[in-house]
Length: 457
Image 1 (tube, one colour):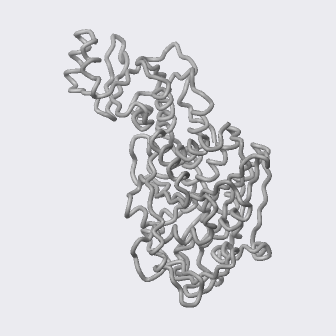
Image 2 (cartoon, helix red, strand yellow):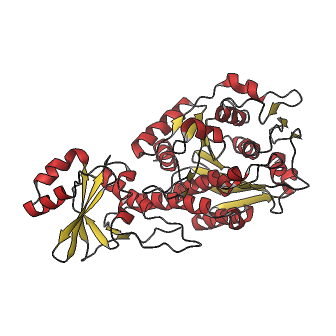
Image 3 (cartoon, rainbow, N blue to C red):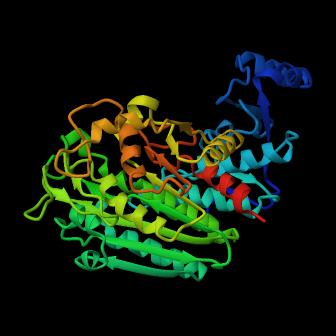
């Protein structure tokens, strides 16, 4: 993944771009020449967030005014690349370093179009950004990597291709990679991953990437890699299955975060784990009522084959915690219930460690990358009771679906192991400035900022 062609280090042809907040508009307007001020007034422009006004000149366009909201929110600037005419633009407003980085980050995110199968209708406007730093560049690349991975249809993004993405990641950073696939999962005591993926012609697997000095704190990052989810024998309706290429969105986030950790050389010993499967329908499909074994020795009664994400994650989490890392975090497109509770923009954060939760929430606010903490309300474990197994993967009640899913995962994490789980949607249902319809990175920048604060030298 590389940056879109949306930045220039210098340009003699660049036009001025004024970034103006609604609260500062009157002051900006008072400084303009009478003719230009009259033009602004005639357009009834007031610099509301998300607006843009082109300024006339003798030879056409002389500049533009960008209406922004929060100066430190990348989303405030993300409409610019496609609202502005193509060409080069240079900032004509004094912004402090945080606001300038937000502008650059928003510009990069707003310039994205998924182009693997269809060429974009036009190129984005380019921002002259001579101070674009490696950190901002890496954040843009990681966020767009999530979008590309999620947007790619399952035909071209199955377990094999997810493995290839991890191989490329490992090769780029000198990491080691191990893949356990097919029936070898049973030999290596990963039976739950095998159960979910065995019906597909594309073999299930656990992908492990290891990087860094073992003397450094150990960080384990786990991502749900269900490359397509039919729902299994509890088959989804057509509208529920339509976008299930995105059910590997957790893996996409985990891969992108690992890329940030390695490219920015965070002083940790990293283990990236991606259980990659396709929840298909066939003679070998696991069934409602089956008892599935797990790596931790906890027996699971299958109430619903469409609650498969927690099944593959429980083996991966068990594998991760055996290594006693300093922190385990997982990303997963786990529940529709989280979307009912919080909508598409707010990932649900669960954590068994107050410091980890507080740090992630603090980073979320600072990065303008929202997450919302939800409770691990253990009395709701009653919704996962099985009469014939240690736990069920679901139950008859539709209550607290996101919480019960997180509680299921917690069953496989020792109480002494710091752990956080982010239930992401990883998707934009509609086009919005900086958020084109399709795959989306959520909570990723906040996670990276939290890890930097926690482990950075």
